[in-house]
Image (cartoon, rainbow, N blue to C red):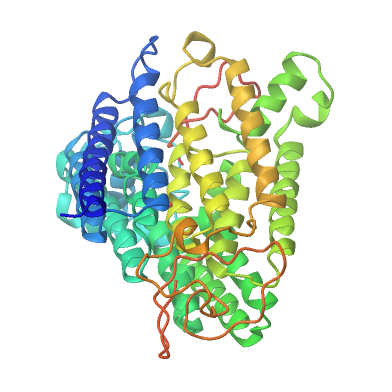
Length: 522
C-alpha cells in the first residue's frame, strides 16, 4: 500500500469519526432541550455548532465521504429528532388544532380561533395564550394539517409524530434533491446535519417544508420549466409566507438575465397560486393574522435591541422606534437595500438560487419578527446556490438565532443567562451579516476553483463553460469581475443536464427587550 493510500485511508477514518460525532452532538443537544440556564447550558449547543462547522469545512477542503454516507447520517439524525418530544416550542399542537378545526369541526381557522372549540381534546395541549389566535400559516399547510387530522384524530402522540415526520421527510427530500444535482458532500452536510435544521424537525415546524418546496421551484427554474416552477413557488408561499421574498428574488434574477418570458411566467403563475389559495381560505380576512404578526417583534430581532437602547436608555430615535410602524418600515428598507446591493454585484450572473438565498437571509436579518426555525427555509436553497460566503452568512444567522433562544421561549430575559446587553451584541452581529450580504456575499475570485467550491469532486474541469443558471451544459457570457459563480453543479457534458440550508412566543405588547415573553405562533 502506498503512503498516499494509507494517508487517505486514515483521513477517511477520521472523517467518519467526525461525522458520527456530529450526529451524536446534535442528538445530545436536542435531547437536553431548553432548560433553566446554567454555566454549562451553552456547551451542548456550542459542541453541536462547532462540530458541524468542522465537518462542513473539512469536506469543503478535501471531500472524503460519499453522498450516501451524508444522506444516511441525515436519516439517522432525523430519526433521533422525531423520536424525541418537541423541545422549545409548542407550535405542533396549534398545527394539530387547526387541522382538527377543518376536518372535525368544519370551521375555517383563518376566520375562527381555536378557543371556539373548548371541548376539543387537542385544545388542552395548546398554550392558553394562543386560544384566540387565528391561523397565520399558509392555506396549503393548513390543508395538509386537516388531512393529517383525519388520521391522528385526538391522539397527541400521533399528531406530533405526523408533523415531525413531515418535517423530517422535507429535510431528507431536500438533501436528496441536492445530491441529485451533484451537490458536493459539504453542501449535503451543511443542510442535513445543521443543528438549526434538526431542531426544526424535532419541533415539527413547517419552515423546512416551505424551504424544501422552494428548492424544488428553483431546480425547475434552472431546468427552464417556468410554468411548473411558478406553480411550485406559489405552493411554497402557500405553505408559509416567509419564503415570499425568495420567489420575488427569483423573478428578479430571471429579469436580469433578460429571460423575460420566464420571469413573467414564474411571477404570474406563482401569484395566481397564492391568490387562489388565500381566496379559498377566506379572502382578505385570511391575511389579517399575517398583518397582526407584523406588528410585534421577537427577542432576536435587531429592532428589539435598538428599541431597548433607544427607549429604555433614552437614546436617539426613541419616539420613532417606540412603536412598531417605524421599525417595520426600517426593516423593509434595510432588507431591500441589502438585497439591492447583492443584486447589483451579481447582475451579470444572476443565479436564481443565490438570489433566493440572499433575499431570504436579508429579510431574516432585518425583520422585526424572526424566530430560530425560520432559518430552515433558507439553508437548503443556500446550499443549492453553493456560494461559500453567502452560505457562511446563512449559517451564522441560524447560529445567532439558536444562541438567542438557548433560553426557552416564554421566559424573562433579564432573569436568565441572556441579558438585554447580550441580545444587543447578537444584534450587532446580525447588522454586520446584513452588510456582508449587501457588499460581499457576491463572492470573491477563487484561487483554486476545484478545491474551494462546493461542487462535486467528480465534476468537470473548472475551466468548463458554465450555463447561465449553474452547470447546465450551456455556455454563458463572461462573468463580471469580482462575481463568483459557484453553484452546486452537475458534471458538464454536451447534453443538457440539470444544475445546480414560534412559535416563539413573543409578546405582542412588548416594546422593550428586558422582559420579552415570547407568545405568538410563528
